[in-house]
Amino acid sequence: MSGRAIRTVLFDLDGTLIDSAPDLAGAVNSLRERKGLAPVPYARLRPMVGTGARGMIGAAFGLQPGDEGFDALRDEFLALYERNLLQHTRVFEQMVPVLDALDAAGLRWGIVTNKAERFTLPVVQGLGLDVRAGAVVCGDTTPHAKPHPAPLLEAARRIGADPSACVYVGDDLRDVQAGRAAGMATLAAAWGYLGQGDAIGSWGADGLIDMPGELLKWLDLA
Image 1 (cartoon, rainbow, N blue to C red):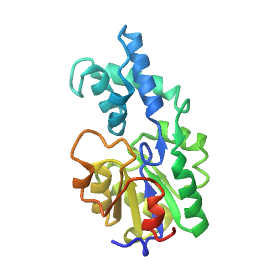
Image 2 (image 1 turned 30 degrees about the vertical axis):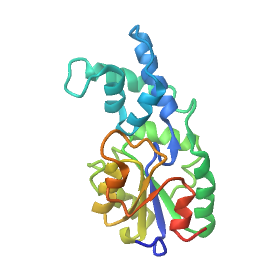
Image 3 (image 1 turned 90 degrees about the vertical axis):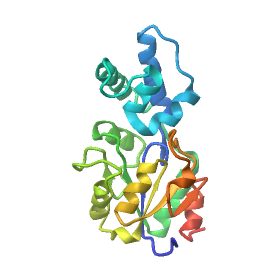
């Protein structure tokens, strides 16, 4: 699929637009410290960021939803994270010129994330993205989260874009599934967190981009 017909770019947040892994890993290791446990290596935690609290608690404590003690650890982890949202979280350095180029070309862009509003909005505002993004749709904005297409369709509605003229860029299989279900083009972001599931090449995206700047080439802007 060509990027020439695309007029709106929608981004996943964590692992695609911003690098929030240091703060999320820091929060879960702070929780382990509270419990008298040694920290988990960052390299083990980073791939799990895309799966949110479930993935972080799973990697740090070996518990899954439904296990005894999971809910209490999840709530304590989220409280720790909420107090330290912007200690080290930054827009990916190579994404900065990409956003500038989209703005200069007159292409609208927005954010669609499964991260809850209570965490998303402070982060987006703190990084100055709220005044630039045409839409910010969170995990609890619509009744459904990704891989359901509803959040992406809501972002397109807010921006005033036809879904067929949108591309969704994300670093998780659910991003590709949601984008395809919404009738959008999809690009898999290989610099992201990626998780521990199927290899990125098997997700069925319309394209795979290794670095943020390749998005501009795909859109014929570079």
